Image 1 (tube, each protein chain N blue to C red):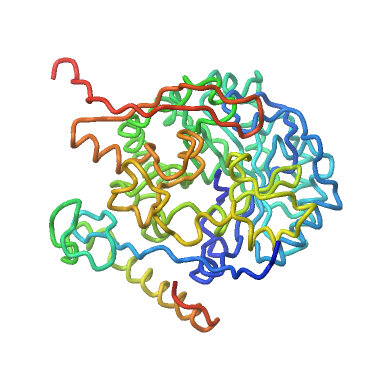
Image 2: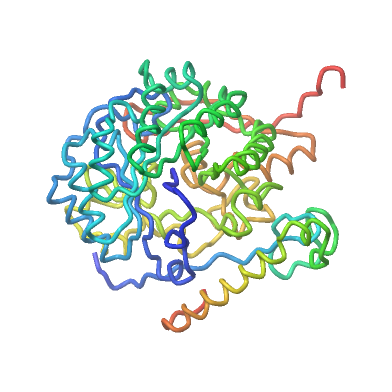
Length: 401
Length: 77
């Protein structure tokens, strides 16, 4: 799940009571699947709106139900959320129900007037996607000029006084650009930078050359640690997305100790995902066919949340679902395979996640590493997954070593 | 579908920092699985970089959160 974090506000922190009572504190809501970008890594294959997206009245009723359940933050996403005509009405409804509202956007054609209107309606913060320097960003986002627009939106947020964060997808080619991306977004006024590994889902399966190999975490994580420290000196907080981890030597740097530590996937325990047609999931990014829990038009959200089996899998914190390396990992009880979306999308089953720094380092001590190889395409549907094999191989000797 | 089933989740286990290598270990760990040293014995980095104070505050937060949960009639998980 793309974590909508804008800061480490105590209101966002999970209390023990939240965890025991399974309060759906965070909701990420795809309010439309319509989109004005053509991202080649898009897991939901966004572009056209869904056939039966919720009406304004139905959407406001969803907000009311979530408020009753104790939701404290809703992040609206798409597709591109602002393409939906009533998006400001929904922002205001969320705000009026006492729920913090944030939005994630590609920023393309999001004008300063629209940003101002959203802030006036109660939007607390805007997360803007920047996936590399201009050529890479525009290639990944599928629209020339989208990089320039994203930077313009950051500047507009600064002018309007709206908190802006940047989200960056970590793909196979972005690593060398990250230091310069950091310079650019600091200059543009960003205060928070969330990074997230691109996941093998939807369009990213079609374009699997953009996926980072698991063993590349050995290079990525020290780089992120360095950027985190350098960012702090310049008033930029680099935050790890839910699939950046876990428990390696840098965990204390970006998750703790003042923010805690990674405590497992919150999907279905303290997080809800909603698709634009009313399909409820534990996380917005999970494969609909395996994790869809029904339509909020047919059944009250409280009833689905309490009872539907597709939402229950994280609540007892068992380790029965773990397999492979994760099954016998020292951190199994705490981590439980990390991000469900990442592992399940890649290998068709949750509980074994090769995108883990602790795992990469442990395997390296044995002289081996893991890489993925695509063996099956993903259907042409939103949140569709393909098939990948996990290959363990000796770490190649460096030339000259 | 019935609404009778109770909503009850479990809390994650408590982790603390090894006071030698500053990597996470389970609360109560004596020998750190990462560095092989005594995880309870305060090392220079743990002391000098402020981790002792921060973990003390975290412990207070956990106690407060547990008390809040008990007052609401919920077990500690």
